[in-house]
Image (tube, rainbow, N blue to C red; front, side, top):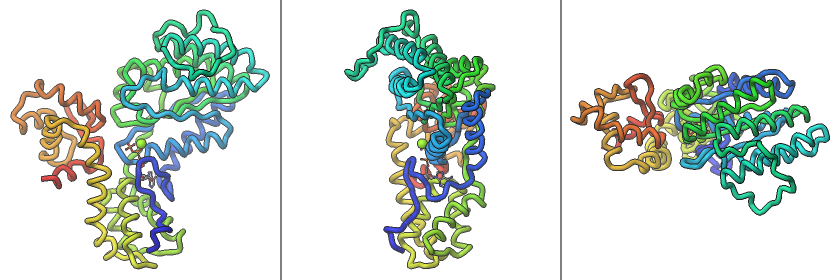
Amino acid sequence: MDPFRNPFAPGAGSRPPELAGRDAILEMAKVSCGRALNGRSSRSIMLLGLRGVGKTVLLNEIGRNAEGAGLLVSRVEAPEGENLARLIFPEMRRVLRSLSNVEAAKQLTKRGLGALRNFAAVFRIEMGGIEFGVEPEAGLAETGDIQYDLPELFVIIGRAAQSAKRAWLLLIDEVQYLSEPDLAALIVSLHRVAQEGLPILMVGAGLPQIARLAGEAKSYSERLFQYPAVGALDPESAKKAIEKPITDEGATNAPDALAAIVEQTKGYPFFLQEWASVVWDNAQGPEIRIADVNQSYAETLRKLDEGFFKVRIDRLTKAEVQFVKAMAELGDGPYPMADIAKIMSRSQQSLGPARASIISKGMIYSADHGYLDFSVPLFADFMRRQG
Ligand SMILES: Nc1ncnc2c1ncn2[C@@H]1O[C@H](COP(=O)(O)OP(=O)(O)OP(=O)(O)O)[C@@H](O)[C@H]1O
Ligand SMILES: [Mg+2]
Protein backbone atom coordinates (compact mmCIF):
# COMPACT_ATOMS: atom_id res chain seq x y z
CA MET A 1 0.00 0.00 0.00
CA ASP A 2 1.06 3.61 -0.40
CA PRO A 3 4.21 4.04 1.67
CA PHE A 4 3.54 7.76 1.85
CA ARG A 5 0.50 7.02 3.91
CA ASN A 6 2.07 4.38 6.12
CA PRO A 7 0.94 5.46 9.59
CA PHE A 8 3.27 3.28 11.62
CA ALA A 9 6.21 4.73 13.50
CA PRO A 10 8.95 2.26 14.33
CA GLY A 11 11.88 4.04 15.92
CA ALA A 12 13.22 5.16 19.28
CA GLY A 13 10.91 7.78 20.72
CA SER A 14 8.74 8.00 17.57
CA ARG A 15 5.23 9.00 18.46
CA PRO A 16 2.94 6.07 17.64
CA PRO A 17 -0.19 6.72 15.59
CA GLU A 18 -2.19 5.24 18.45
CA LEU A 19 -0.80 5.32 21.97
CA ALA A 20 -2.61 2.24 23.15
CA GLY A 21 -2.97 0.76 26.59
CA ARG A 22 -1.45 3.58 28.61
CA ASP A 23 -4.52 5.40 29.85
CA ALA A 24 -4.02 4.43 33.49
CA ILE A 25 -0.49 5.81 33.55
CA LEU A 26 -1.45 8.98 31.68
CA GLU A 27 -4.26 9.49 34.17
CA MET A 28 -1.92 8.94 37.12
CA ALA A 29 0.37 11.64 35.76
CA LYS A 30 -2.53 14.02 35.13
CA VAL A 31 -3.65 13.65 38.72
CA SER A 32 -0.15 14.30 40.06
CA CYS A 33 0.26 17.36 37.85
CA GLY A 34 -3.19 18.72 38.63
CA ARG A 35 -2.61 18.31 42.35
CA ALA A 36 0.75 20.06 42.19
CA LEU A 37 -0.81 22.94 40.30
CA ASN A 38 -3.49 23.22 42.97
CA GLY A 39 -0.93 23.30 45.75
CA ARG A 40 -1.72 19.78 46.90
CA SER A 41 0.81 17.15 47.80
CA SER A 42 1.54 14.95 44.83
CA ARG A 43 3.83 12.06 44.08
CA SER A 44 6.49 11.82 41.46
CA ILE A 45 6.46 8.90 39.05
CA MET A 46 9.12 6.53 37.79
CA LEU A 47 8.25 4.63 34.61
CA LEU A 48 10.08 1.35 34.56
CA GLY A 49 10.28 -0.96 31.62
CA LEU A 50 12.37 -2.85 29.14
CA ARG A 51 13.81 -1.43 25.94
CA GLY A 52 11.31 -0.43 23.29
CA VAL A 53 8.15 -0.67 25.41
CA GLY A 54 7.30 2.97 24.96
CA LYS A 55 8.73 4.81 27.97
CA THR A 56 10.02 7.76 25.97
CA VAL A 57 6.82 8.33 24.04
CA LEU A 58 4.88 8.08 27.28
CA LEU A 59 7.15 10.63 28.88
CA ASN A 60 6.61 12.95 25.93
CA GLU A 61 2.86 12.53 26.09
CA ILE A 62 2.87 13.25 29.82
CA GLY A 63 4.89 16.37 29.06
CA ARG A 64 2.43 17.52 26.40
CA ASN A 65 -0.51 16.98 28.73
CA ALA A 66 1.24 18.86 31.50
CA GLU A 67 2.03 21.80 29.24
CA GLY A 68 -1.60 21.85 28.23
CA ALA A 69 -2.55 21.98 31.89
CA GLY A 70 -0.25 24.95 32.45
CA LEU A 71 2.78 23.42 34.10
CA LEU A 72 6.33 24.42 33.31
CA VAL A 73 7.88 21.37 31.74
CA SER A 74 11.54 20.41 31.35
CA ARG A 75 12.76 17.41 29.39
CA VAL A 76 16.20 15.95 29.81
CA GLU A 77 17.79 12.68 28.88
CA ALA A 78 20.61 11.34 31.01
CA PRO A 79 23.39 10.33 28.63
CA GLU A 80 25.94 7.89 29.99
CA GLY A 81 28.66 9.61 31.94
CA GLU A 82 27.11 13.07 32.04
CA ASN A 83 26.52 14.62 35.42
CA LEU A 84 23.20 15.78 36.71
CA ALA A 85 24.38 19.27 37.61
CA ARG A 86 25.31 20.02 34.03
CA LEU A 87 22.22 18.30 32.73
CA ILE A 88 19.60 20.23 34.63
CA PHE A 89 21.34 23.55 35.08
CA PRO A 90 19.91 25.03 31.84
CA GLU A 91 16.44 23.83 32.79
CA MET A 92 16.58 25.36 36.25
CA ARG A 93 17.71 28.61 34.68
CA ARG A 94 14.94 28.55 32.13
CA VAL A 95 12.29 27.86 34.76
CA LEU A 96 13.54 30.61 37.05
CA ARG A 97 13.66 33.06 34.18
CA SER A 98 10.17 32.27 33.13
CA LEU A 99 8.91 32.61 36.73
CA SER A 100 10.70 35.93 37.04
CA ASN A 101 8.09 37.44 34.76
CA VAL A 102 5.51 36.97 37.49
CA GLU A 103 5.51 39.90 39.89
CA ALA A 104 4.74 37.80 42.98
CA ALA A 105 7.76 35.60 42.34
CA LYS A 106 10.31 38.32 41.46
CA GLN A 107 12.19 38.38 44.77
CA LEU A 108 12.45 34.62 44.98
CA THR A 109 13.56 34.16 41.40
CA LYS A 110 16.25 36.79 41.92
CA ARG A 111 17.59 34.81 44.87
CA GLY A 112 17.20 31.64 42.86
CA LEU A 113 19.22 32.97 39.96
CA GLY A 114 21.88 34.13 42.40
CA ALA A 115 22.01 30.65 43.92
CA LEU A 116 22.15 29.16 40.46
CA ARG A 117 25.10 31.33 39.68
CA ASN A 118 26.94 29.88 42.69
CA PHE A 119 25.92 26.44 41.53
CA ALA A 120 27.35 27.03 38.07
CA ALA A 121 30.59 28.25 39.59
CA VAL A 122 31.14 25.33 41.99
CA PHE A 123 30.21 22.76 39.36
CA ARG A 124 32.21 24.54 36.68
CA ILE A 125 29.31 24.93 34.34
CA GLU A 126 29.75 27.27 31.42
CA MET A 127 27.02 29.85 31.52
CA GLY A 128 27.24 30.14 27.77
CA GLY A 129 28.48 33.71 27.83
CA ILE A 130 25.09 34.92 28.97
CA GLU A 131 25.37 37.24 31.92
CA PHE A 132 22.85 36.66 34.62
CA GLY A 133 22.64 40.28 35.58
CA VAL A 134 22.30 39.13 39.17
CA GLU A 135 24.66 39.00 42.09
CA PRO A 136 25.66 35.67 43.60
CA GLU A 137 23.46 34.78 46.56
CA ALA A 138 25.82 34.20 49.47
CA GLY A 139 25.51 30.89 51.26
CA LEU A 140 23.21 29.15 48.79
CA ALA A 141 24.05 26.19 46.58
CA GLU A 142 27.77 26.72 46.85
CA THR A 143 29.18 23.69 48.67
CA GLY A 144 30.02 21.83 45.47
CA ASP A 145 28.27 18.76 46.87
CA ILE A 146 25.24 18.06 44.73
CA GLN A 147 23.40 16.42 47.63
CA TYR A 148 23.36 19.76 49.48
CA ASP A 149 23.21 22.20 46.63
CA LEU A 150 20.47 20.69 44.49
CA PRO A 151 17.87 20.48 47.28
CA GLU A 152 18.49 24.16 48.10
CA LEU A 153 17.88 25.13 44.51
CA PHE A 154 14.79 22.97 44.28
CA VAL A 155 13.37 24.61 47.38
CA ILE A 156 13.90 28.11 45.98
CA ILE A 157 12.48 27.15 42.59
CA GLY A 158 9.56 25.46 44.32
CA ARG A 159 8.83 28.54 46.42
CA ALA A 160 9.06 30.77 43.38
CA ALA A 161 6.70 28.48 41.48
CA GLN A 162 4.32 28.46 44.42
CA SER A 163 4.29 32.27 44.60
CA ALA A 164 3.60 32.41 40.88
CA LYS A 165 0.88 29.76 41.24
CA ARG A 166 2.72 27.54 38.81
CA ALA A 167 4.24 24.06 39.03
CA TRP A 168 7.36 22.56 37.54
CA LEU A 169 7.45 19.11 35.97
CA LEU A 170 10.86 17.64 35.36
CA LEU A 171 10.97 14.76 32.87
CA ILE A 172 14.13 12.66 32.93
CA ASP A 173 14.65 9.82 30.48
CA GLU A 174 17.21 7.01 30.86
CA VAL A 175 17.44 7.53 34.61
CA GLN A 176 19.52 4.36 34.98
CA TYR A 177 22.49 6.22 33.54
CA LEU A 178 22.62 8.70 36.41
CA SER A 179 25.39 8.04 38.90
CA GLU A 180 24.34 6.93 42.34
CA PRO A 181 25.24 10.23 44.06
CA ASP A 182 23.31 12.13 41.37
CA LEU A 183 20.27 9.91 41.74
CA ALA A 184 20.47 10.29 45.50
CA ALA A 185 20.67 14.08 45.16
CA LEU A 186 17.61 14.10 42.96
CA ILE A 187 15.69 11.97 45.42
CA VAL A 188 16.71 14.14 48.37
CA SER A 189 15.66 17.24 46.45
CA LEU A 190 12.25 15.83 45.60
CA HIS A 191 11.87 14.69 49.18
CA ARG A 192 12.61 18.20 50.45
CA VAL A 193 10.11 19.88 48.15
CA ALA A 194 7.51 17.23 48.96
CA GLN A 195 7.96 17.87 52.69
CA GLU A 196 7.48 21.56 52.16
CA GLY A 197 4.51 21.01 49.89
CA LEU A 198 6.19 22.78 46.97
CA PRO A 199 4.96 22.24 43.41
CA ILE A 200 7.83 20.33 41.81
CA LEU A 201 7.33 16.91 40.31
CA MET A 202 9.49 14.50 38.46
CA VAL A 203 8.49 11.84 36.00
CA GLY A 204 11.46 9.63 35.24
CA ALA A 205 11.82 6.72 32.87
CA GLY A 206 14.33 3.95 32.61
CA LEU A 207 15.19 0.30 32.91
CA PRO A 208 13.72 -1.82 35.71
CA GLN A 209 16.93 -1.78 37.71
CA ILE A 210 16.14 1.79 38.78
CA ALA A 211 13.74 0.61 41.46
CA ARG A 212 16.63 -1.02 43.25
CA LEU A 213 19.10 1.78 42.49
CA ALA A 214 16.70 4.32 43.87
CA GLY A 215 16.00 2.17 46.92
CA GLU A 216 19.69 1.90 47.62
CA ALA A 217 20.22 5.59 47.09
CA LYS A 218 17.53 6.54 49.59
CA SER A 219 15.27 4.24 51.49
CA TYR A 220 12.31 6.62 51.41
CA SER A 221 12.28 6.69 47.62
CA GLU A 222 9.69 3.92 47.66
CA ARG A 223 7.19 6.28 49.23
CA LEU A 224 8.27 9.26 47.19
CA PHE A 225 7.55 7.69 43.82
CA GLN A 226 4.84 5.74 42.17
CA TYR A 227 6.39 3.01 40.05
CA PRO A 228 3.99 1.99 37.31
CA ALA A 229 5.40 -0.83 35.19
CA VAL A 230 5.47 -0.10 31.48
CA GLY A 231 5.35 -3.44 29.75
CA ALA A 232 4.12 -5.22 26.68
CA LEU A 233 0.61 -4.22 25.64
CA ASP A 234 -2.24 -6.51 26.59
CA PRO A 235 -3.77 -8.24 23.53
CA GLU A 236 -6.71 -5.81 23.29
CA SER A 237 -4.47 -2.76 23.35
CA ALA A 238 -1.98 -4.33 20.97
CA LYS A 239 -4.81 -4.97 18.55
CA LYS A 240 -5.99 -1.39 18.83
CA ALA A 241 -2.45 -0.08 18.31
CA ILE A 242 -2.39 -1.68 14.88
CA GLU A 243 -6.01 -1.67 13.82
CA LYS A 244 -6.92 1.92 14.54
CA PRO A 245 -4.18 3.48 12.39
CA ILE A 246 -5.11 1.13 9.55
CA THR A 247 -8.79 1.99 9.62
CA ASP A 248 -7.99 5.69 10.10
CA GLU A 249 -6.25 5.47 6.73
CA GLY A 250 -9.30 3.90 5.17
CA ALA A 251 -7.81 0.38 4.89
CA THR A 252 -8.89 -2.78 6.68
CA ASN A 253 -7.30 -5.90 8.06
CA ALA A 254 -8.36 -9.51 8.30
CA PRO A 255 -8.82 -10.60 11.92
CA ASP A 256 -6.33 -13.45 11.66
CA ALA A 257 -3.73 -11.13 10.18
CA LEU A 258 -3.98 -8.89 13.20
CA ALA A 259 -4.04 -11.78 15.63
CA ALA A 260 -0.83 -13.17 14.17
CA ILE A 261 1.08 -9.95 14.74
CA VAL A 262 -0.28 -9.51 18.24
CA GLU A 263 0.62 -13.03 19.21
CA GLN A 264 4.08 -13.22 17.72
CA THR A 265 5.23 -9.82 18.92
CA LYS A 266 3.86 -10.66 22.38
CA GLY A 267 2.49 -7.13 22.37
CA TYR A 268 5.88 -5.39 22.51
CA PRO A 269 5.32 -1.93 21.05
CA PHE A 270 8.53 -1.59 19.07
CA PHE A 271 7.97 -4.93 17.36
CA LEU A 272 4.34 -4.09 16.65
CA GLN A 273 5.27 -0.85 14.93
CA GLU A 274 8.03 -2.45 12.90
CA TRP A 275 6.00 -5.38 11.70
CA ALA A 276 2.87 -3.38 10.96
CA SER A 277 4.96 -0.88 9.03
CA VAL A 278 6.58 -3.54 6.84
CA VAL A 279 3.22 -5.21 6.27
CA TRP A 280 1.67 -1.93 5.20
CA ASP A 281 4.36 -1.31 2.60
CA ASN A 282 4.23 -4.85 1.24
CA ALA A 283 0.49 -5.46 1.17
CA GLN A 284 -1.54 -4.90 -1.99
CA GLY A 285 -4.47 -3.65 0.04
CA PRO A 286 -6.97 -2.34 0.70
CA GLU A 287 -7.30 -5.31 3.06
CA ILE A 288 -4.28 -6.55 4.95
CA ARG A 289 -4.32 -10.35 4.93
CA ILE A 290 -2.58 -13.11 6.83
CA ALA A 291 -0.46 -13.85 3.74
CA ASP A 292 0.84 -10.26 3.83
CA VAL A 293 1.76 -10.69 7.47
CA ASN A 294 3.53 -13.99 6.90
CA GLN A 295 5.39 -12.72 3.86
CA SER A 296 6.64 -9.72 5.84
CA TYR A 297 7.98 -11.73 8.73
CA ALA A 298 11.49 -12.30 7.41
CA GLU A 299 11.97 -8.67 6.44
CA THR A 300 10.69 -7.51 9.81
CA LEU A 301 13.09 -9.78 11.64
CA ARG A 302 15.95 -8.54 9.51
CA LYS A 303 15.07 -4.94 10.31
CA LEU A 304 14.76 -5.66 13.99
CA ASP A 305 18.04 -7.56 14.08
CA GLU A 306 19.85 -4.73 12.33
CA GLY A 307 18.13 -1.78 13.91
CA PHE A 308 17.00 -2.84 17.34
CA PHE A 309 19.04 -5.78 18.57
CA LYS A 310 22.40 -5.40 16.93
CA VAL A 311 23.04 -1.88 18.21
CA ARG A 312 22.73 -3.23 21.72
CA ILE A 313 25.22 -6.00 21.32
CA ASP A 314 27.71 -3.85 19.43
CA ARG A 315 28.38 -2.06 22.70
CA LEU A 316 29.64 -5.19 24.43
CA THR A 317 33.20 -6.50 24.59
CA LYS A 318 33.96 -10.00 23.33
CA ALA A 319 33.95 -11.41 26.85
CA GLU A 320 30.63 -9.74 27.54
CA VAL A 321 29.16 -11.20 24.36
CA GLN A 322 30.17 -14.66 25.63
CA PHE A 323 28.29 -13.89 28.82
CA VAL A 324 25.02 -12.97 27.10
CA LYS A 325 25.39 -15.89 24.70
CA ALA A 326 25.57 -18.21 27.67
CA MET A 327 22.40 -16.64 29.05
CA ALA A 328 20.55 -17.16 25.77
CA GLU A 329 21.69 -20.78 25.62
CA LEU A 330 19.86 -21.38 28.87
CA GLY A 331 16.53 -20.57 27.22
CA ASP A 332 14.34 -17.67 28.27
CA GLY A 333 14.97 -15.70 31.45
CA PRO A 334 15.24 -14.89 34.24
CA TYR A 335 18.55 -16.69 34.59
CA PRO A 336 20.11 -17.84 37.86
CA MET A 337 23.67 -16.50 38.04
CA ALA A 338 24.81 -19.93 39.16
CA ASP A 339 23.59 -21.51 35.91
CA ILE A 340 25.33 -18.89 33.77
CA ALA A 341 28.60 -19.54 35.60
CA LYS A 342 28.14 -23.25 35.20
CA ILE A 343 27.50 -23.19 31.47
CA MET A 344 30.55 -20.95 31.04
CA SER A 345 32.65 -23.19 33.32
CA ARG A 346 33.57 -20.20 35.44
CA SER A 347 33.11 -19.18 39.04
CA GLN A 348 30.37 -16.68 39.78
CA GLN A 349 32.90 -14.41 41.40
CA SER A 350 35.15 -14.25 38.35
CA LEU A 351 32.15 -13.20 36.26
CA GLY A 352 31.34 -10.32 38.59
CA PRO A 353 33.10 -7.57 36.59
CA ALA A 354 31.54 -8.64 33.26
CA ARG A 355 28.14 -8.82 34.90
CA ALA A 356 28.53 -5.34 36.39
CA SER A 357 29.70 -3.88 33.10
CA ILE A 358 26.85 -5.36 31.06
CA ILE A 359 24.38 -4.06 33.64
CA SER A 360 25.93 -0.59 33.47
CA LYS A 361 25.53 -0.67 29.69
CA GLY A 362 21.83 -1.30 30.20
CA MET A 363 21.78 -4.67 28.47
CA ILE A 364 20.85 -6.86 31.43
CA TYR A 365 19.51 -6.18 34.89
CA SER A 366 19.38 -8.08 38.11
CA ALA A 367 15.81 -9.24 38.35
CA ASP A 368 15.75 -10.84 41.75
CA HIS A 369 18.32 -12.11 44.17
CA GLY A 370 20.81 -14.08 42.13
CA TYR A 371 18.82 -13.79 38.92
CA LEU A 372 19.62 -11.84 35.78
CA ASP A 373 17.46 -11.00 32.80
CA PHE A 374 17.75 -9.14 29.52
CA SER A 375 16.49 -5.58 29.47
CA VAL A 376 15.72 -6.00 25.77
CA PRO A 377 12.57 -8.03 25.11
CA LEU A 378 13.00 -11.22 23.08
CA PHE A 379 16.75 -10.74 23.15
CA ALA A 380 17.47 -14.41 23.86
CA ASP A 381 15.70 -15.28 20.59
CA PHE A 382 17.90 -12.81 18.75
CA MET A 383 21.07 -14.31 20.22
CA ARG A 384 19.97 -17.76 19.23
CA ARG A 385 19.26 -16.56 15.69
CA GLN A 386 22.89 -15.43 15.52
CA GLY A 387 23.92 -19.06 16.03
N1 LIG B 1 1.41 2.49 23.66
C1 LIG B 1 1.94 2.27 22.46
N2 LIG B 1 1.18 1.81 21.44
C2 LIG B 1 1.72 1.60 20.24
N3 LIG B 1 3.00 1.82 19.92
C3 LIG B 1 3.82 2.29 20.88
C4 LIG B 1 3.32 2.53 22.19
N4 LIG B 1 4.34 2.97 22.94
C5 LIG B 1 5.42 3.00 22.14
N5 LIG B 1 5.12 2.60 20.90
C6 LIG B 1 6.10 2.48 19.80
O1 LIG B 1 7.16 1.67 20.29
C7 LIG B 1 8.43 2.13 19.86
C8 LIG B 1 9.34 2.35 21.05
O2 LIG B 1 8.92 3.43 21.85
P1 LIG B 1 9.93 4.20 22.81
O3 LIG B 1 11.13 4.64 22.06
O4 LIG B 1 9.17 5.22 23.56
O5 LIG B 1 10.37 3.02 23.81
P2 LIG B 1 11.35 3.10 25.06
O6 LIG B 1 10.74 2.30 26.14
O7 LIG B 1 11.69 4.51 25.35
O8 LIG B 1 12.64 2.35 24.51
P3 LIG B 1 14.18 2.50 24.98
O9 LIG B 1 14.26 1.85 26.33
O10 LIG B 1 14.96 1.75 23.95
O11 LIG B 1 14.49 3.96 25.02
C9 LIG B 1 8.14 3.37 19.01
O12 LIG B 1 8.17 2.97 17.67
C10 LIG B 1 6.74 3.80 19.42
O13 LIG B 1 6.06 4.42 18.36
MG1 LIG C 1 13.43 5.56 25.38
